[in-house]
Image (cartoon, rainbow, N blue to C red):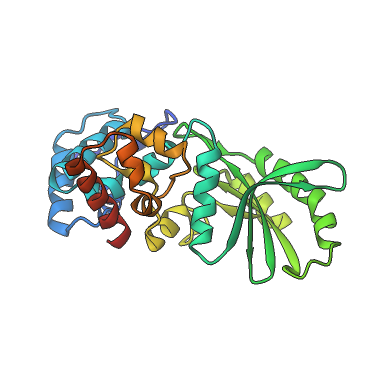
Length: 280
């Protein structure tokens, strides 16, 4: 007997066919066992109806994972956790800086550079292998939005303005510069083609393939504190305002949980969750 095909509604409003494989892949990314993945997929399938939103499917799978193991749930909510770095883009800039720092780059956030025409505040400067990377970050707090070609067009023009003055300095720390655009969402095809054409390095949730944000975060175990299933939204905002963006930063600065009035028992559970994520 053929399995009934369900249409689901994406955050953009687009109707697509439900993909069991996509759900399985996202659950496997959390580290859950094959048996648990199969169990959750079956339970979610049993509750499908025509037009169900991807948000509802995610919420159901997340609840089942959290009930079994909070660390799995934390990893599963990674994409949503990146959105929770908002509403401003500054924590996302710190997050990008943190990922690059732990990848061997020397980084600075919010530096002002003089261009040929005007001065520019650069989100992240990252130096590695004698290349100075000029990085602009585009943060979206709403799911479903994409970076269209207008964004890399604008970012590339800013990079071009600072490129000549930088490279004419004969700085001993770097021999060349490179422009970057990093976003927490995805790029449109036009944006990807433009970036490739002008040599602008693009970094998004799933691009470059195999080395996008999702893969970098998981490979380096650099999870944002917003993945926590134990911290409240108020507590997360308190920590973000104090530049605590990564779980491993909070582990080193656990005294901030005392400032929040977190009980010792709960503090130990939070730190255990953080350490499990960093060492998983």
